[in-house]
Length: 167
Image (cartoon, rainbow, N blue to C red; front, side, top):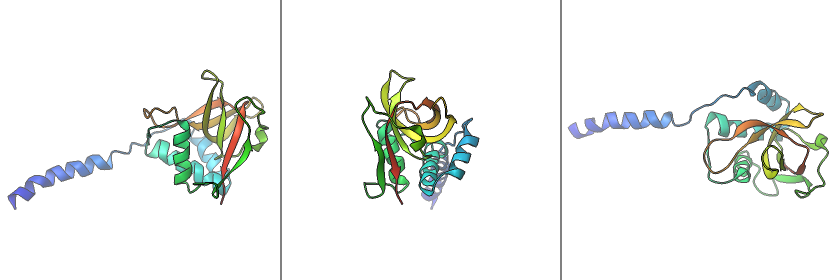
């Protein structure tokens, strides 16, 4: 009986720390995110809610690239495989690029990241901040398993692929 009592404080500490392991973060874009979720299609809502939950409510970090992170979001949102998602537009990094009016909240966007060495990048489209200048709020993951995804503004003038969930 005495030995069991010794372990109770240890168990309590473990439970306390494990319940605190998911650290919720905030973003200055939360009003835009909430508005995008509220006005999104049913597919977009599922993707955006899962993306926000992973990135901000749980601060999930994974090993892998931006593509791997977005793939996990889509799978957890229920859009795994070709039957549950579709390619809306498909080109290559050299173009041709899409007309931006094709993009919807929750879309998985592949684009040239003009703010970082013009490399290929993929992220989840949240909302337009300046449609005429093609500036958009995206949920972006830098990869390498260091920090959770974050909302960031990108130039979407060079989008070459769009993937969208299908109900």
